[in-house]
Picture (cartoon, rainbow, N blue to C red):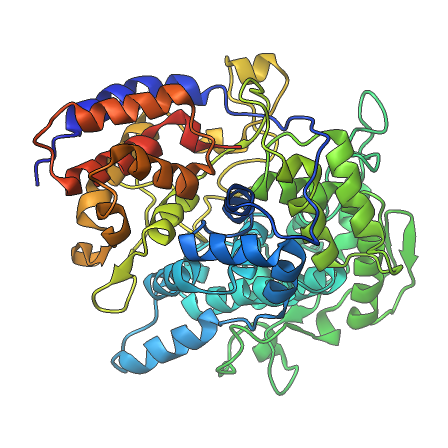
Length: 550
């Protein structure tokens, strides 16, 4: 369908977008906050929902603004989890006997829950955790175990509101993580073999303590930085992760090696330890010595307790959650407040994820919008979140009831990002990525999402949304938005744009952008109401102001 906003889209979108994106960085200093004991405004509610969910809706803005943040968080923490695993099992029952589940069924379940799930806080936090504790369908073995990966994602969701120590153990023992980082089937030292070091390295570098010794505010303890671990620590910790393999009724060599009949649930049941393959030598790492002949289970407990109690975990994991949910460059004070919540939830408990999540999302720097002149504030919205924002804001539904999206990897024709298809264990983008030769680099700031942003992906996003907004997405474009409420306002473009501003931009649209969008809408007096709606939404979502979440 030919749409009259094509030329305006190109002018505001393709030309301005990439240049303006280069200002996307940082986390500004603010001093005010909103009480969590009283109702909040619709704008404040929209802002919180933009960070804590897959996107605001008019109904949820109304609920949150009426009930206040304290009641909303309590309600969200109590909501039961909807399992992707259940969806995958149901999908399997519909397949022929010789057919296998694929990642496509997981994508269906992901988008259904992300858009329609009422446990939005869990949905959003789980997605954030999946970008810290990374596994990926791009691994060929995991692609063959689609149900197992879905269960791994469920595991992140199940422990998202529990204790970080429990989360770390659940991740460590999940067989899909075992496959992805070579912990499954890892064997003890022999004359010609040493334990695989992959998981030992990544659990420290990416999942717990990071590379540098940190103060509690996330700053380096020394300049130059002091390493948190050395190669000998990796070697010592690698011995802990030996002897772990598939769950099952016995601990035979054939089961350890996956040669015999597999347990039908081994793709999701926690790995078990096989004493015949576990390291019997002493294990020395991070100043801890596990005596020789300590069992696999006891060794694992000591190792995970050691990592969990390391002083780096609070600031390291806290900062990564802030980056995924709120801002790319939080201030040291912000990181310090989140790390303090990790260290003590107010009742003497370390690692309480509920306390950490509330500290991240209710911090003054998260609650209070930055000044429009603060170019250090916010984060670039990653492509999955942009699409989810649109689907939720405008009540996208599927004619078949299925969200058959497929992968969205292609940067030119799709979005350059698909859930659970990271190209490596380092996620789609690194937390400390600095786009070279930019004002971000000159300012000494980070912009992680810029790592998957270039001329190709910018054009690809614009083209994708230009078609999605009027025509829908997914298989046969059967997933379509419902613009009934917006059509009722289309005769009054000012009110229409204000509604879009609240839903997509939390009322942070500048007067300049608002005037540009209104000018585009009013430039053709013969524009239908439907095309006015399309223009208002597309030009908002194409703008740098929308793409930088603040």
